[in-house]
Image 1 (tube, helix red, strand yellow):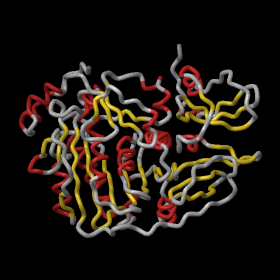
Image 2 (cartoon, one colour; image 1 turned 135 degrees about the vertical axis):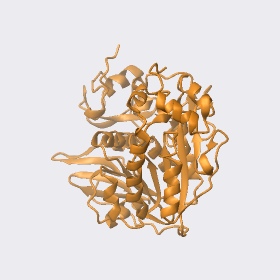
Image 3 (tube, one colour; image 1 turned 180 degrees about the horizontal axis):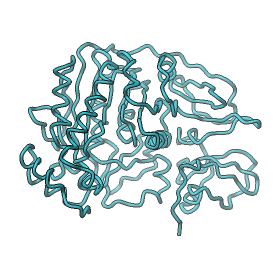
Image 4 (cartoon, helix red, strand yellow; image 1 turned 135 degrees about the horizontal axis):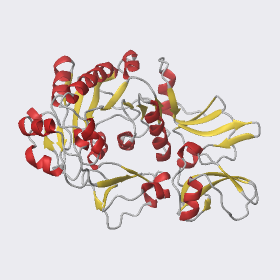
Length: 439
């Protein structure tokens, strides 16, 4: 439980200019709630027995207590993602949209990636998009989470949203999880309390205005804007939405709102409020740009380049293989087609999935490939061996012919090793390795 007191100016603001009152202030002093969302492509590896479901999101559950996720190999394998329960509403909101097959989407402020994963899991078939994050370190964390989730229809960029100003009517859906003053995190994050001051909401609102104005012209007629903040004040929430409706051809769009939500001021948007919902604080609002989206888009043709025999790459008619700077990339055909048509020099950190690297000795499988499918067979290991592997260590394993193998835990791929006959080289990415000491 956070022991730092709530800021006096925040308490005054809640009592004077919000519909939440003392019940919110009391709830912010209680214990936070831990919840997770399970990867729909890997959910057969997760047991939800005895867990309470999150009512507004499928394959999502509350935990009785917060475990040490670092010591669970299934977490590193992308079987589930620890996510605040209110944020999971993104999955429900996107699922309810009448988006066409083959849509192209943008998560403009995406790190660390929980809402990104929820959005892409909810899209119709053959959709693709960009997840952007301006801060380099956070953008790398975003890449890691997308890789472990096993997505090949996402490109990650590391740009200011100003870079998107030059794109005209490009996206069917834009998610803006805007940088905010963080009032909704006061229960679980002491830093959010200490960093807040009475000028923070107005300062953050000014930044949000710039971000939204940078992006609004990227939205296609008939497209959707999903706006979210983890804060309670009107400067960053209702006033932002009202400004968009006043200045642009935007209108509120209905969606199946759960009973746990409270309506925003003036009927604009909805809130998840601690004490009312089993979650932390979140504001969400769905807007639609005037116009009509097509029923579906033409799908870009697939193609396979080079010979990747022996790498056991999961391919189907919706995948494209390309070679780029000694790396083999596996992308959805919609992502490949959309990126090819972009003329803006974005800073790409990731395009689809990197499945192999070309060396002097031939193609070497990349970690992304092991995360793409549960059907890749491998060498089973124990829990302790899995944690040793995730630390970058080695241990005795049964003899196998020399070559590349997937190491798996409870049938779930963890990553690659290079078996040398009587020992192996650990190929788990160094930047993601566990650093804590194992008993």
